[in-house]
Image (cartoon, rainbow, N blue to C red; front, side):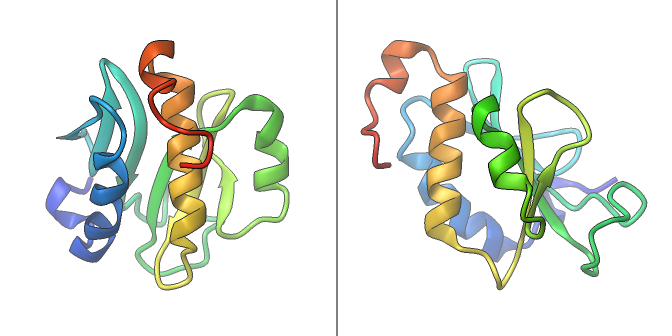
Length: 131
């Protein structure tokens, strides 16, 4: 099992400013890695799962981020494959392998959409539709 310190600092350095723009979202250590929450709901969770958890990821020491996706968008996001796939749990949970290939603009949009899925409506309405 990884610890919060196992997530590469360069990944956390990219995610923290994104999350800082989401009203009342906060960071905390998770059972594995780091997660960001709104109230008691997880918006995004980043961790090193180990090769046994996701054997389909052909990346040494993958960094994975799970997040919520509107159910109607899940298949479209994950159908093309790498770096996106369906998480092993949850009906509307997607995952992304993060690294040098990552499109951080797209990750910002996906995390913002995840926040909209999980936040109370009055907080979700405080962020614009474009980010």
